[in-house]
Image (cartoon, rainbow, N blue to C red; front, side, top):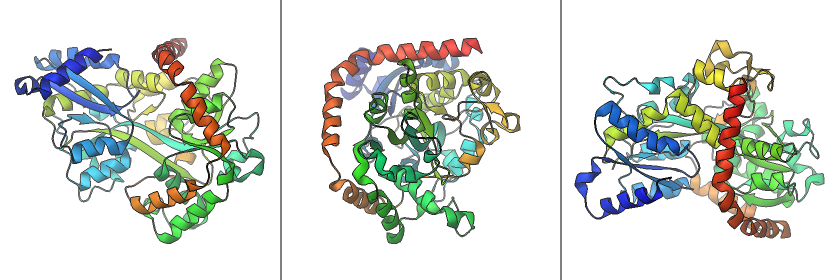
Length: 433
């Protein structure tokens, strides 16, 4: 990895070498969210396509709001960033994004590989008069659901969020510390009857942050918070593999990671989206208002939409690319491992009985019960979240925190080794198909 080169280039820019900025591309992305070998490859590809050299400064963030603050308040000149759905809404509202022109000369427009499903999802973004498709290109997406250990929790139980209320699981439940994801998912589930009756709809319900709705979700969370042994941002999947927890409300990407890691040690974990409903989330590439190298930014986004690059990024991260098409479908299909599901919503009618991983590509019937998060009621939701978490800390919480810190050094040492191993493992699977 080119960390030294990244730092050197950054120092040159900060030192005022503005003439170099035309050949520098600043990318700001989530940590562990790309096949980093593609960074070097893009530099070569870009020069082949344009005849111009480019050097990437690649930096990472762990929280959407950190990224947003640097751009909105600090006017940082990042050329490409990868915010989540609700932050894209906020950036559009605050006029922080540049429109994405798709003129690549003789270079193919790979952005056209984005699945129609994702284009429709971007149309659901509150753009304040703007179509988010003109400003954003989908990168990865997923769902919110439950990672569970079938040794202790049955498949039948996880068909409902009420599994979290089972007193038999006290001290064995982990919650993703993501108030918006949890609120939206539970709000949809708690309104199932109204949705089924046509009294409410999935397009508008997630915007509802009324006092009544917040109280309803808060009461539901309080009904099982004594069973929660930790509110986690990243360590939950690892605790599941160690059987320190049996249920983890989490993201599908984390679920896939945990399932793979558990399989390596002869353990089984599963993932389910409760039938009462949940939420879909996504991240996308955008060009911020203060970008300096817009041309290279557009080419970078286009490069990431090449099917072979999308597959590599999925292999490395465990998340699901927004790119569709036959090449992705063929690569991800495995009749020997997966039962057929209806993935026609993503790949078209040819995928109505596709043999795909249901963690990554849920069945159409499941997706139709999932709504999208929005940038609504942030202050009120944060207050609710703080109230729910405030007195829920238990001895288990502190034990888990200590375990996480104890394993931090070891995790850093094995991190890249495991990532390389995972890449080889996925590649081997594809060769067998």
